[in-house]
Image (cartoon, rainbow, N blue to C red; front, side, top):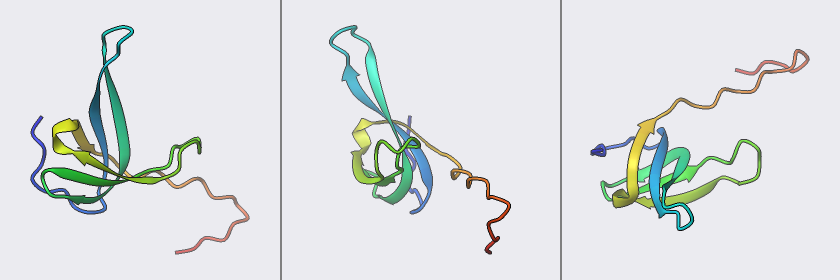
Length: 91
């Protein structure tokens, strides 16, 4: 997959990287990273990785090399949680 020449800072993306073959079953293993782009120079993607939805992993800054990226696509922001009726609306 050809990677884009530019990615705007702040864009929310999902990046899939190949982790290699599992020694037990021989199948390829992949890891997905979801977060906001800090910078992209065509060789290194700096990403502010989102915290996990279940709270087990905090947000973190990571660097991914272009050679390890198998797929990259833009994704929408997480929806805001529903407000309670007794919570004032702020604009």
